[in-house]
Amino acid sequence: MAEAFSESLAFTQVKKRAVASRSFRTKITPSNGNTFNAGNTIDISLPANLPGQYYNFNQCYLKFKVAVGGGNDVQLDRVGAPGFIKRMQISTAGAQIYDCNNWNVLASCLMDTDSSSEWKASSGNITMGTLGDQLQGETVADGASRTYTVPMMLNPLAMTTPHRMIYAGGLSAIQFRLTLEDAAVAVKAAAGATLTFTEVELVCLMTELSPGAQATIDQMTGGQYNILANSYINSQATLPAYAAGVSQTLNANLGVSVSSLERLIICHRPQVTASQSTAFSLGNRSTAGLTQYSLLINSEKYPARDVIVGDRGAEVYSELLLADHALVDFRKGNPILNGFASAGVALAGTTPKGTSALSGNAPGYAKNNCFLVEDPAGLTAGTTVTGAVAGASNIGTFQCALELESGLSDGKSSHIYSGISTIASVVQYKGDYFADADGAGVRAQTIDFFAQHTVMLSLDMRGSGVWSVSV
Image (cartoon, rainbow, N blue to C red; front, side, top):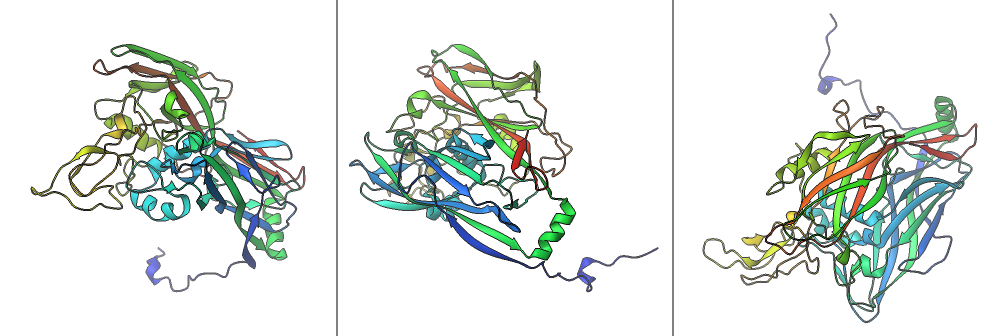
């Protein structure tokens, strides 16, 4: 019987030299202007017909400068600079590859669950203007300007599974169309605040292979590049206002027709604050009195038993972690409870002094449960002070999700379509609501649904020579 050595003793196994290639950085400017205002669109075309060259969208970011006007300072939402982008569209040769409305709301949801307070206070603060200590972003003074960089995330080109570079040798350019959010929604400020965007650039790290290396790729692929990737679809529903002590049921058709639906992210936002200039419109999310929810696909319920919100949200938050494949990731933290109550609680009988850049307040300050707020005002993230009293936050952070992938892949499959097919199916959300009898009822809510699903990106260099997508 042959015996095997530990890898620590495998002295003949050494790193091999990479194929001849080079990496370089390129900056691509918009094709439709140099200066943009809130509500405008930015068109950026990535060059095509570049044999042997590849885009790496995990190392690609959008850079822009924002100038504030209108006589008032502005406060970014806690998602930071991604809040400026309302809609992201990607197309090539007139065919749509990706189209996600309310992209900034999706970014806010995922940055709440996937980023830590430490990251928001350090890297995120420098690049995107996030804060690690409160449920808000940084302040930009009237008349000042600030340069931000935003990774080109949450689109199929950046979410390939497993990671793949995107070949730039196609015959048609890949076009990004970014719709900027209205100033009243993107930032918190007094009415009349203006945002002007200049120095917009898409910064890409590219790899160029030698002719011999590219010839090897052509031989292996036969000129066909097929890439699995994740993508998002947004749909919306409205929950009408209802009185305290009243039960409500909402059935909403989502219109999601895909071959592999992997998860569904659900967030409720009060309609008043969703477009209010003096509120945190993007990240102010509520429970709206939600008590339980499920998904119906051709009248079959997923999961078979409804997800219960409960008194402290333990079950609904566990389902949120399941959908994020993080239920047993005990190292993962997030700032979803960075709201704090109005009174500080002293430790060891002393008044806490100073503040912490990461935890949001001095040791002992009382946190409020901003995850389970029925109908938050969304007007202030609160303040911390040196004394024992802080300003209370009234922002809600509730969101929920459903995991729809099979256990076969555990959410990490690179070759298996493991979600649920909804092609030619009726997909419905069903939620049961009850307004606290001691409260004032629930205002009308906008509900955003973000369906994550698998797509196939294809490029046939011996056929049409342009990228196509199939769901």
